[in-house]
Length: 412
Image (tube, helix red, strand yellow):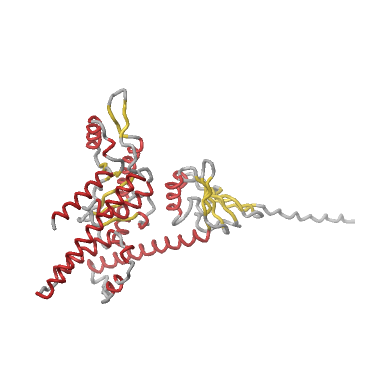
């Protein structure tokens, strides 16, 4: 009698309680508990986001790797690098980040660190904006290439059409008729309006009847200049007295008035409008010849010099030394990524900026700190020894603003 074959028992494979995601090299970058839907995203060791900001991101309410995080383990995509940079600038190095599918965005302060919760839906919204910026940049590149080819090789690449930008009459009048428009004007807007004012005067066909109108325009112009400068000077003096050590206050103040305080420049570029993913300085200023300069902003209360008792002389403080090094690093990065930066500026301002040996400036401290003759002498020697960087004092900016007001008054 043949022996009956024993039926093989099917052993059911136990499903893992965890979702795991590895990159192409087999390195684990994401692990999530399927029951709790909580886990961690581990940033790859060679990623610049890990080197500069954080090593991992907590995940709350997810079954798998959420969008907005790189599948290669490089970190947050699109807006992520900018978010991490601003978190670090505002909250310091000791930060912990969590992305949540349900919780609202907020910052929780602990004893020695900050815990940041970032709502996933809101993260996706800002990433959409960044994707649009990147898409527009690619379109702009293609348009420039097509225009070049049509110009240089018209037979092989005929130009199909030429876009023209027209002005619809009444647009400016409609905008300026708003009673609150002046509150939203930037320094660049004000400069443009003043330039337009001059061009209008130059192009006007004057008659005896128009003399009164011209005098009224001139009077309004001089009055507005005086009121505007008086307001800046008053605000400047008040902030120097009450907020010498609040860096955020001075970032906002200089952002608003930089083209007046340092009036040899034509354009001001905010780094928020630059989509290239590298570190940029606080301000990029463009002179009338379209050359770019770098400005790093510190506090008026920043210590400029420290005393060396063994050598009986003064040397740069740690904060100023760090700022000098940072400006040099910016110059190096701008040199390497100049093409992308020029594209952004051309898109924003309609000008072709030049990146030839950009100068670096640090706005920090006050000249009042140089109380002794030896401090003044040592500062001059140290400042003159810098190759590509110069230091500007806050009280010097205020003094120059007052001199500008005096010259305008004498010119009446």
